[in-house]
Image 1 (cartoon, rainbow, N blue to C red):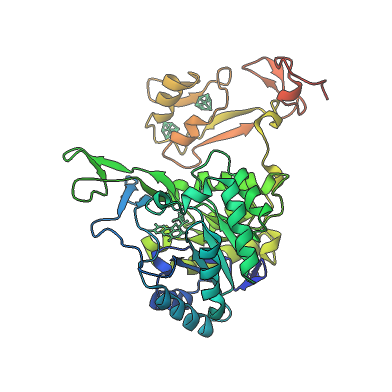
Image 2 (cartoon, helix red, strand yellow):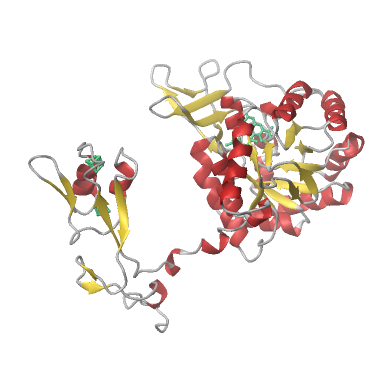
Amino acid sequence: MANLTTNFIGIKSPNPFWLASAPPTDKEVNVRRAFEAGWGGVVWKTLGAEGPPVVNVNGPRYGAIWGADRRLLGLNNIELITDRPLEVNLREIKAVKRDYKDRAMIISLMVPCDEDSWRDILGHLEDTEADGVELNFGCPHGMAERGMGGAVGQVPEYIEMVTRWCKKHTRMPVIVKLTPNITDIRKPAEAAKRGGADAVSLINTINSITSVNLDSFAPEPTIDGKGTHGGYCGPAVKPIALNMVAEIARSRETHGLPISGIGGVTTWRDAAEFMALGAGNVQVCTAAMTYGFKIVQEMISGLSEYMDEKGMTSTSELVGRAVPNVTDWQFLNLNYVTKAHISQDDCIKCGRCYAACEDTSHQAIAMSADRTFTVKDEECVACNLCVNVCPVENCITMVELPKGAIDERTGRPVSDYANWTTHPNNPTATAAE
Ligand SMILES: Cc1cc2nc3c(=O)[nH]c(=O)nc-3n(C[C@H](O)[C@H](O)[C@H](O)COP(=O)(O)O)c2cc1C
Ligand code: SF4
Ligand code: SF4
């Protein structure tokens, strides 16, 4: 069986599945249960500075988006960092770590943006025997208005400065957790690297309003008639997170910087995708909040079966495998030609592909009087919209034309690789290869 043990910036864990800093990791009793269920590590719910803890709202703190089967697709929250006293959290962290030495214990932190505050909080952690710290520069609500969290994460200079302070004041590895609420994720990652970060983790939640109540005319969740923007997470954010992870993994400036991938990980497959795009491990929040701690068992068995199938013996063989295949649009092969093909055996004659292609694509699907749907190769541009709207999996497939075959749409034979950089229509084209 594949070995799922990971060594992420020197922090060992029996598998690459960590619980992200959030409600599942905010108290001893839960973290113990999570470890019993099999999680490889946890990032403890973000701790704040010493003194009176933060105060949360006493009304609903979540908004949600569901699929047609009411499966949770996106979750929005207006929760703050831990509202439990610092000394209680520290005592509990120490007690759990003492009993689960083989698991990763990371402490998430968010304190005001001055060196004394960071030195003080880091000093408090020395005794816990935790394995590392994660700097929460991400939460977009509540704390950001107080100059912390996302407010720091949106200014690369602040990220660099705080990371440098932390590296100065702790012996533990420092993971910088990035906010996705920024235009170019490479900039904060570069800043973290300049500041000496051992790794980055991403994404934290995306700023959002999930819904508006059309009777009370207030955003949801609604607190006494008012709502506010919150942080969005869950399966819906995975594509955004994957892209950001890939951007950091393939950028020359940050290539090789260890990444902990977060955002919508629900199955082993999600985790494998993050890892293939360069994440050394993954963190999970919404899936655990939706399905409970035991979901990790399917992640573990699924990932190890997949790795066995692929002949991979360690996770390091998976990490980054897809990075060389992420490129910019201009380098895609413009001479790669496919055509949609409809399997008449599988088709249930619903007509969705016809409506989609006829109304919004290239009028390339014919419908006969008896509702037989066929693709007109001479019109099909291979956009694959029909594949995506068809309710029957694999009923429509994209079939590659072999080299030399005539594309009936253009009348030209399929030729060798060539991209936009050398295309005759490109006014800035370089000499053809
Ligand atoms: C209710 C809730 C509270 C959260 N609190 C924190 C927090 O205290 N610190 C932090 O770094 N991230 C926090 N997060 C963000 C998660 O750690 C994670 O980055 C995000 O939810 C994306 O992962 P997911 O799609 O698996 O949920 C919170 C998320 C939720 C849903
Ligand atoms: S691939 Fe696009 S153009 Fe071709 S049949 Fe499907 S929807 Fe129409
Ligand atoms: S969408 Fe799929 S099932 Fe429906 S008519 Fe088209 S090919 Fe058939």
